[in-house]
Each structure stands twice: as structure tokens, then as C-alpha cells.
Image (tube, rainbow, N blue to C red):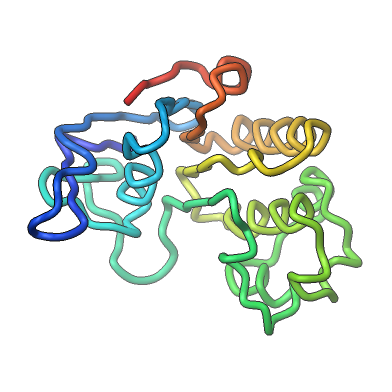
Length: 197
């Protein structure tokens, strides 16, 4: 279980709280949507859950314990701008290989072409690179995935293909997923339940 218990967060000691007293629990294999207008802290909540940020108050735990400070984090964060998550000097194969060596079924299931592994991030489209960042996050130790507007910049066909592939893998591997979006229609289609901030 991935849990946020009464978490609050501010970016600076004199800044207002961006997140205040937020609670959330996500079980294995569950898809939860996080909705709300811009500026309500959705992305900040996602980064808190993945330990990219530390809460000002409250706690985030996985199965009752804090995730390890070093090594592979069982909670991975995916953003809407995958180019920022990829080292531009590395080939795609090296980027994925840093986390794990994916099996052929997972590569094929995400619609990743083997030829992409010899390319650099700037040589792929946004949709292709997003598939690569998803593939990298799906390392064997993954238990929970935070997907922050991951298809908002893609065309409808690419959106549908990525969500179909990702949801299939999430259910198959019992991975908990938090889908963050301002698109209520999308969340209604992909999520088991929706939380609003």
C-alpha cells in the first residue's frame, strides 16, 4: 500500500502551503485518478509520493515503511515532458539499461521498436520518448507509478495507445498507479476511482 498520511508541503519556510493535510492510499493493481484545476498542488503531491520532495509535515510510506533513500525507488514518477528525464548524451538503450534489461514482451507491449535503442532522445518524437520513460520505470522493483499528465501533449491516437499498453502492464504486474490529470474524461476512462484536490 502506498500511503500519504496528513501530508503538507511548502517550498520555502515563508511560502504558503501548496499541499495541506492531504491523505491518499493506493493498493497494488489499483488505478487512482487525481484531478483538480491548475495550481492546486497535483504535481507536487505526485513528487511527494515519489520522494522527489519531502513533506513539511505528515508521512509517505510503502507498506508501512519509508522507501529506501538510496537505490531503486519502488515508487517512480513520470512527467509530461519526458525529454527532461533523459540524458541527452546517452543512447536510449543506455538510458533504459541504467534501470533494467526489459524483456521482449514488455518492449513489444509498449510499442517500443528495437531500433530506437541506438538513437538519442532528441531523435525520437514526444510519444516515442514517453514510451521509453515508461519502459525504464517498469523495472522489476516497481510497485507504484505516478503518471503526471503523461499524454497531455500527445495526439489522441498516441494517448490511447500509451494508456492501453500501460494499463495492461499495470494490471498484469499488480502495480498501483496514480494518474494525475485535469482531463476528467480521461480519468473517468482509466481510473478505478478519482480523488479531487
